[in-house]
Amino acid sequence: MPHSQHPNSCTISSYQEIFNKSLMSSTPLKLNLIEGSVSFSFSAQSAKELKAALDELMTRLKAVAAKPTPGGSKPTPQRPVEYRYTGDVFLEVFCNPNIWPTPFAAKVLLTVRDGSIRLTTEAELTRIIEDVNQYLEEVE
Image 1 (cartoon, rainbow, N blue to C red):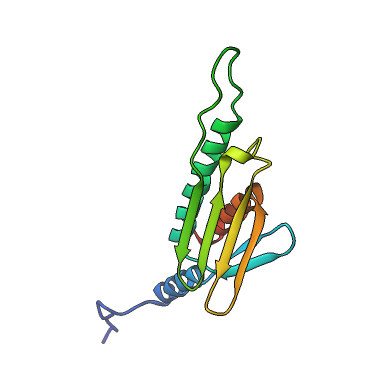
Image 2: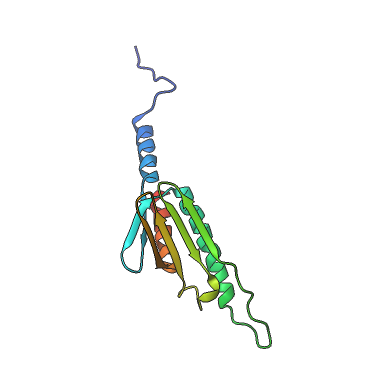
């Protein structure tokens, strides 16, 4: 009698797919700081939200860096960008775009904390953007 497959049974490949997805969701995000780095559990969805906040920050930094036309007014001051994530850890990324001459000079204030430790430091914006983009490439 031929072996029939139960409609709800999983094949080896579907188990591998489930396993790979669980690995991806547990891939830590590593942020390189000016000195050292910090890694923590982070989801792909949260990384996408962080990327959107960083993209918005770049837009605001470019608006501030835009040179006024002769006889024109100064660029409009931009609101600070603040991103917050609460999961296994609390992550906050803050930047006031009005204090940096160019997006490439900008730094962000980064806070990572959990129940037993708190790290607050500056990080280079361009490096954080690279780290988030690399993380998204790994998990997607």
